[in-house]
Amino acid sequence: EIVLTQSPATLSLSPGERATLSCGASQSVSSSYLAWYQQKPGLAPRLLIYDASSRATGIPDRFSGSGSGTDFTLTISRLEPEDFAVYYCQQYGSSPITFGQGTRLEIK
Amino acid sequence: QITLKESGPTLVKPTQTLTLTCTFSGFSLSTSGVGVGWIRQPPGKALEWLALIYWDDDKRYSPSLKSRLTITKDTSKNQVVLTMTNMDPVDTATYYCAHRPPPDGVLFDYWGQGTLVTVSS
Image 1 (cartoon, each protein chain N blue to C red):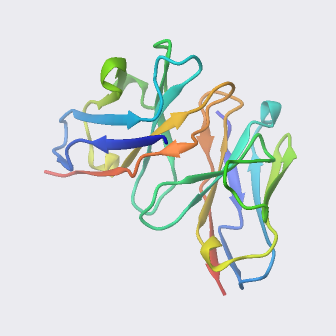
Image 2 (image 1 turned 180 degrees about the horizontal axis):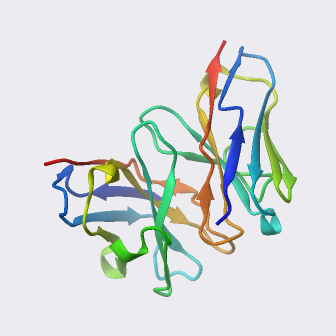
């Protein structure tokens, strides 16, 4: 199975700053079938990005995804207070689908 | 509007079988390409995919848990049921069901609120 490694584990930034989160895959993710989710405490994950770079319905354009093969990035261009949460990547190009271990984005 | 909600016991004893029900609305599991999956999350830990059932009754399981899992659907009731046998304290987690949209890949665009299941004697 494909192992996804997210870095950093914790990212401390201030509102207004730019956030760059990474997701590395142990094997190439076919068709760039990679998604990003946001999870706030006590809530279910919310789909942000699919197919590596397509925003899900209702997701603000400050969220963007990029990458292919084994290296993927989620960028939040200008952090809003509500963006501080845990972010997970998920690959769905190979079975079984797998999730990364998460990056916690915290307020500095 | 798509909604999903998990239901089932909050506490199970070791070796028991867990049965969880996902009741959904806003879509039909008889529509081509649609699926419903189960994902769990131990307290403070990452997400783990468990199982998925498609509109055509095709079923997929996590290889590491396949021997313990069964997923079924009742299209007329808009429900999907997950059973997990031989529960252990390490299975303590919040269990989510989620909607898999067509056409390609297995990702989840709508999630239930989750239900916390504790395994303890």
